[in-house]
Length: 193
Image (cartoon, rainbow, N blue to C red):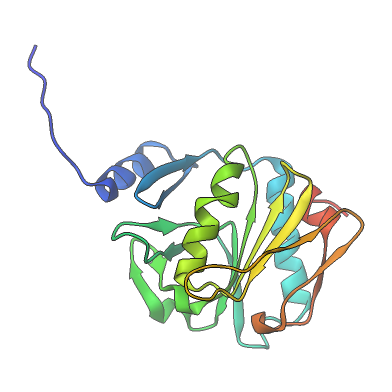
């Protein structure tokens, strides 16, 4: 039996995996391929709730859009990109299309990740990648450690010490995002009020 061997770039491998594994999220972080399973019900409800909250806070009237699962082109390595669970972006974000359904980091005001089985990626490489990309606010609903973590105002490719919020508290969305809104830690973690 003959075996055909073909080299491919990590970007080509990501494209192949995305086609072969529908419903899974494929990302490249710091040159490493990441494949995430579909979200569970609580994860999905948290994102739906965020859509409702940002809509109710007048994000569209403020010139913002809030979207789930769009690509964020990362400057860390040539093929790197992430697909945040939820993002608040400038209304003209589509003008900043880079490639592969990914958009330039300068149109992102805030990204949100709700942790799943790949929680260590959200708490490690994504913190570094989002800081290097200059993402002003990175909020993590850390279901593994039962808290919400907010990174903001990166300088020189690094975020300062994050703010941490526990159950029963609310998280104020930083003014730099462009809307006035407090988010319930419990709802971010559980997906229900």
